[in-house]
View 1 (cartoon, helix red, strand yellow):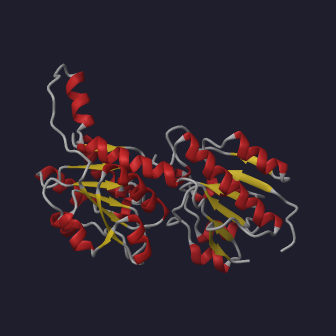
View 2: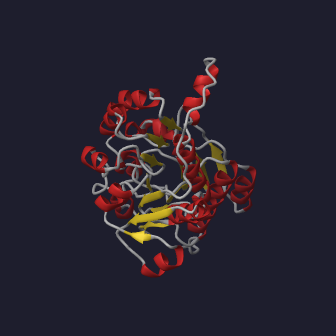
View 3: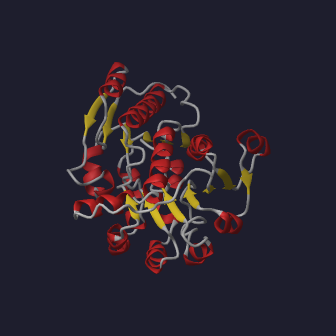
Length: 333
């Protein structure tokens, strides 16, 4: 494909740093920053608003907005959609392929940030940080006994780049790591000291269960009421992957019943299904839930890395050059 002369690039994300802006401009791009309103993400923008923002654009650096067939059909000049992140469950991949578009992810940009966040949630919920601070604010400085991460059994569901980053961090806690994945790698298991198991075994044996799988029709509500009941009493669930992996209504019931010891949640089912918002609110109110608003990748360093990967992906497509390794989701050119 010859280089594209019309090089308008729209960014519908906050925290787009100067280095990535300079990279795009140095490569002839006319950059339009269109961050969502305060308290909102680009996933809250409707198709009509997105059409207006993206009119005349060749490239789009996007967060969680829905990239639908009607939107793509309305924007025939939009050649590349670059996710500033790694999930692409909100992109109609089939439509992008059929309509000749390129969809990329920021592979490798936020692995460290999400892995750090995962470990942080494990420690925070296990050591009861939220409950302790709430008590102190109320004038009760009683000591609450928590649970160590050290030498515990941690089950990871999914073993992509982020999952492997979590494995490396867990080695410092002398944890026993169990892994459930569709693609076991015996060489990796020997090198990293992990044990591949099926999901029922992982749930039964783990003190902490941490999710690192993509959201697909097959993995939706992978952790449902039956899976939660199969977890050991007092165990902790950590989800920094995708909200739809967990039936949050069943999770709420498990936490209220005292079966689970707590949960560390960066993602919620209500992100994809607003009907679950009351369930999310009820989870947030529980003292043994430590929650963040899908912020696992949003460190200063992680955002800078993913911004630059996305920017390089856009420029590569517009220049007709090969894309950075691991970034291509679909290439319909």
